[in-house]
Length: 221
Image (cartoon, rainbow, N blue to C red; front, side):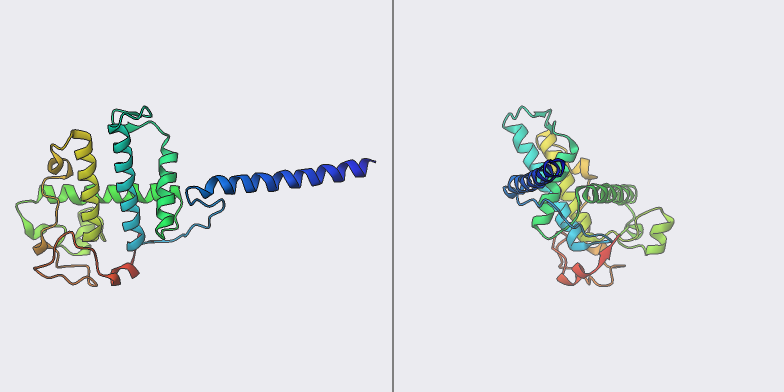
């Protein structure tokens, strides 16, 4: 009798686990999420980084629209949702676009991107009158000596400028975007002719142009 009761209890537990798994899968199906995800590790490619930047831009726009329409979940233009829920949205966006990273990886990468971006931006502000020492003209070893990131790519910098400017415009009603992003953050085409060996540039190249596909094969830390 004891063995029969134990067997019935075991079968019930198995059914319960299966039911929970199916329920979670159905709940996740509406937003293309996956119950179990195998996250990619290692260095981020340029393509993954661009997807992450686009995800953050879309998330900022999504949150600003909610606040502009009087969403009570937002206060002062900023969502009151926990940060982990916002980064889960970023993760889902990245997965839909081929960037198989976790929300923690995305969060850490974004922090690193913004840290490097601010260093380059501040450097360009200080040396605005002397283009010879622009970040985009000095060699990698000199960048390291100046405590600057050694491998910031122009297209990544330009994409980050756009995110910063959009966020500032949304929070100030349109005034002072250039000042918040660092004045003339857009990279002068004449300064983009140096270390990125695989990205030849011409004087007619537009600063905001997307990188050639060949760059997508390179990785960045």
